[in-house]
Length: 451
Image 1 (cartoon, rainbow, N blue to C red):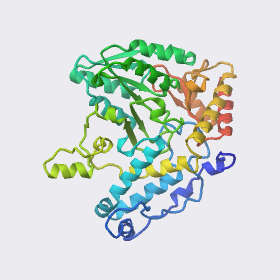
Image 2 (cartoon, one colour):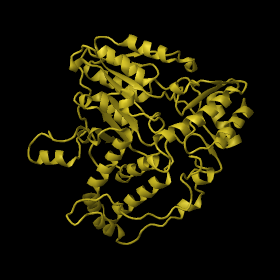
Image 3 (cartoon, one colour):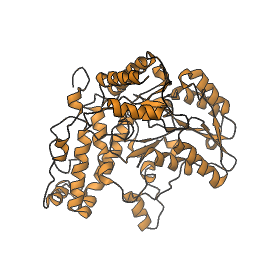
Image 4 (tube, rainbow, N blue to C red):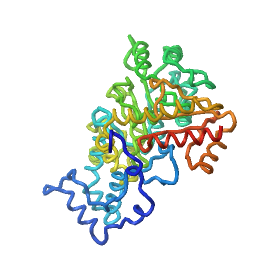
């Protein structure tokens, strides 16, 4: 890394290097599983086994393309790939032994790493498989009575809208939507307009507000701190059971912004870890404050050891931390969940920390927005104000529908972009720490050629 930035050779691994990796043969996995236990039988924090050396760079992206969609579903960076392979080898060599001796330690390490990154307590973290699973678990079992309201917006994604629709159909909880800024002109959004619209939607029946931190439809980033202050004012004088919980789908800010849930003023924060964080695919989390966990109830039985022992003894799981209690049990992609630790370590170490990642991502997004704004026939739909935007950059091309633009960028210029998955479609980019200034400039040249 030079000047806090990764050059293209460090970022990319060319084809055959990954495919040529060899697996550990024989009974190595059993030996590994034994070695991760201490003399007293307790699991230690040491890695399970050494993985094949990666001779290339951090990301295994195809160097023939300029990829500005790594936020969609992360390309596993080298440490994450290596950790997944380590755990896969252990599980394949002897699943029962590896689970018995490794699972508690690696689960705890993943939860602790997430908590450290967010600046919260590990007991407050529930591990999930995705943002969708997280928000669904939250809204399905949020304590509310028929006639109570959950307030959301017209700008939220399918996962939030559908989770709330299913909840309303279940027990009569009412769901209302407000518009925070003009749907066709998101680039004009302002903090005052957003906060005023949301505050105006709160009623005495509102028990929760369901928001998305960064709108994937436009790239608008909500001013959550200011919203939280408005919610705190609405909560003044309310009975604890009637206080409004600020619940956030944080996926397109998590791994981009230098802010914790406490900084944002959120009560509940759900996110996948496999987008901007570059964590293992199929991983996510839910954080909630202690008072918010009291208003939420588990949906899927946990596999936490203390809860299982309580069941064996015919007792209620009263001593299980809320995060563990709300972590869905059952067998899952263990090797991916356990590799979360390396994803958080990567951000804190090689990528320079949360503030450096945020600065780098914002700089690339700003370069892209400013460049697009100079191209005739292109309208940038994401606010230029960094207080109202993160890494997503959306644009409208006067000459081409978004889908055709995406196809032609890929086919004619080897630039990979995406289409916003909404009724109104925009051309969408997501420059991240996997990209360079040259990547942004190539994308700008390609768009100019189409416009």
